[in-house]
Length: 185
Image 1 (tube, rainbow, N blue to C red):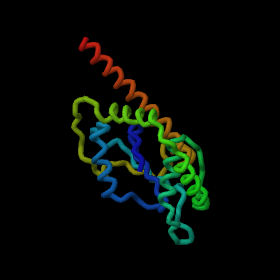
Image 2 (cartoon, one colour):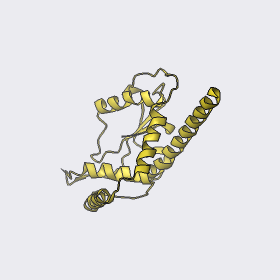
Image 3 (cartoon, helix red, strand yellow):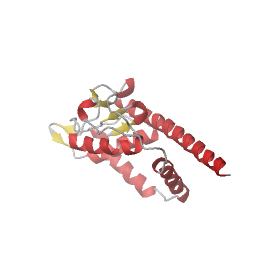
Image 4 (cartoon, rainbow, N blue to C red):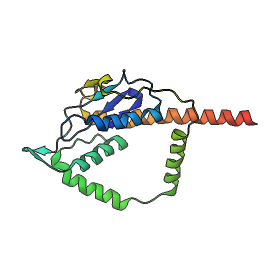
C-alpha cells in the first residue's frame, strides 16, 4: 500500500491479486491524517491495478510476497523502470541479499534522515481537524494509476511525485524557520 498524498491516491500493489484488507487499510488511513493533514477522503482514489505481477503460479502461491514488496519499494525509491515477474524472484532475492550485505552505515545520510523526520513530524502548524477514514468514501479503480501505460511505469514515477512534494515541504519549513529567526532578532 502506497499513499500518494500529492495525487490524493492510494495504490495497492498485491502480488496475490486480491483486494486490500479493510482493517489494515482503515488502520493505515486513520493514522495518515495525523501527519499529512488530510481533511476529507472524498476526493481520494484507491487504485487496485490488475497488471501487478502475480506470485500465484498454477494455483500455487510462490511464497515470494516479501520479495515482491522489496521489488516495488526499489522501483519507487530508485525511479527504476524494472518490469518483473514471478520468474525473476530468485534473482531478486540475490540482489536484495547483495544490497544488504554491501550497505555501509553512513553517518551523513543518517543525519539527513533525522533532519527530514524533524522537518516533517515536528511541524508546529495548527492542527487541522480531519475526518475519520471510511473505506466506502474512496473512489475505487482497477485502472493503472495516474494514466500511465502500466503499473511499473506508474510506480517508477512515484519517485518524482513524492520527491517534488518533499522538496516543497522542505522549502516551506525552511521559510517558516527563517521567518521565526527573523522575528526573534
